[in-house]
Length: 129
Image 1 (tube, rainbow, N blue to C red):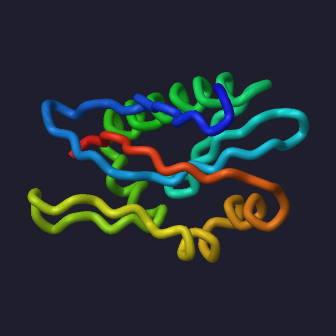
Image 2: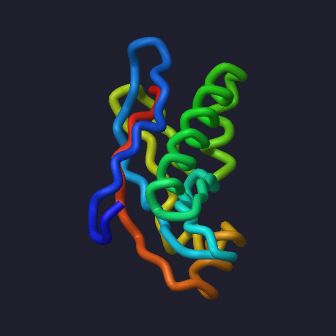
């Protein structure tokens, strides 16, 4: 992937015909000779020898996570455990935790933030409603 290019992710699964779009922050950094794409709000990452490979890995991981969690009926419980705010009504949307909260509650993100140069991008995802 060219520097400065926008990553496009389709690591989503549709639950029935309902899904909702949310914006998530992704952190891209280098560790041990690999490029890592990390989403602190979901605590998921993909890696590869370059950004394109890491992006593809992240797509697979995210897709498999959503598929597994929706099939096991644990998706929304898992989001709550990661600090997400879930709607009380169907017309409301889910809200991922903000970056400042994640820095205090997510030790992996805190480690990355404090010890690695990184680039942050915001990406829209569709998740089951």
